[in-house]
Image (cartoon, rainbow, N blue to C red; front, side, top):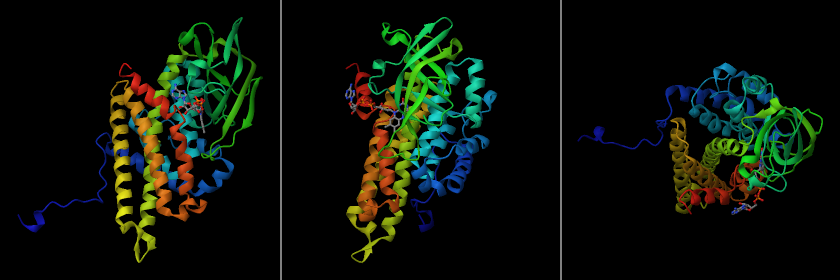
Length: 394
Ligand SMILES: Cc1cc2nc3c(=O)[nH]c(=O)nc-3n(C[C@H](O)[C@H](O)[C@H](O)COP(=O)(O)OP(=O)(O)OC[C@H]3O[C@@H](n4cnc5c(N)ncnc54)[C@H](O)[C@@H]3O)c2cc1C
């Protein structure tokens, strides 16, 4: 064997995963270019002000809010992987709150409308949401019921051919700006899991009160609302899906939300890793780059391995999802694992930055604060572990 024939690893090669085609990679390029050019420069400003509504319109105009949505409603008709590509590339905005606000629109509020909605509801809410001219939010959590979804109190009672809604929702992302909310209610207080019904409630109806803009640890670029519903009257046509099936509808919705959340967590971890790698190559101590200390090199090795493991879990699970399976156990595993490692990675990246990691200027502490939400939102770590454990009959 001559020296030219010797196989050498090429660590710089950008190898795409087999679930992605060249078209996906082109899409990735164009989303990344857009995000870096038009969103990332505002990252710091939006940390103070929350991101503006024009982002929805602009992304709608570019087709990015309907990548995997049906063409009949203005979507691009792509597969589930296109949605993954968006979740990954939007991490380049370095603005977790923005990524979350967009994901609420595309992967949380819209899917139940498209899956269970009437033709009229799809035209009235999904189509403009895809175009970015209407903003959506989703209301599950209440002040007294988060993990325990079955414990919600918001109810919708029949009155003639209307429903009257009373209750409250909290921690609602996009809640201050949304035109409509996909609302989880109880329509039969005695029917257990069969007593839930979803509604699409326009946010400008009398009795819908946007009470408080909640202040939080991270995700400052997103708005988070406490909402009250006081005798809000909606017609029967506001019911989304089947009456009494709302619990099952929302559990289905949560699967997509968790998988996209996992993809976002992996992408966020990769972002902070990449930035820290550059830093470790440049920052000198004791006459050499800190990255050349074995202990730091091993930190990178550990982080890279965790990120890659989480990514493979997300991709394999997405492949199952795309191919018609309903892989709840694997989605849950991907969600809990990706969320945890993303926080571990961000924490280690602060450490590698030393004092600079603690300073706002470097944006690493922000990445940690933003990523920290993943262990709570869309189902806490503890709930995820419980779902996995129960799936083994325990
Ligand atoms: C920034 C932000 C944005 C959000 N956006 C939205 C949104 O747009 N729409 C929406 O509906 N919700 C939203 N949420 C709510 C989020 O999904 C909930 O916070 C989450 O589901 C946890 O519920 P909780 O906060 O009520 O915690 P709790 O349910 O009160 O849990 C408290 C603790 O108890 C643990 N625990 C609870 N039950 C069990 C159990 N059975 N076994 C073991 N441990 C348990 C939990 O894991 C947690 O550690 C958002 C939250 C945040 C912070």
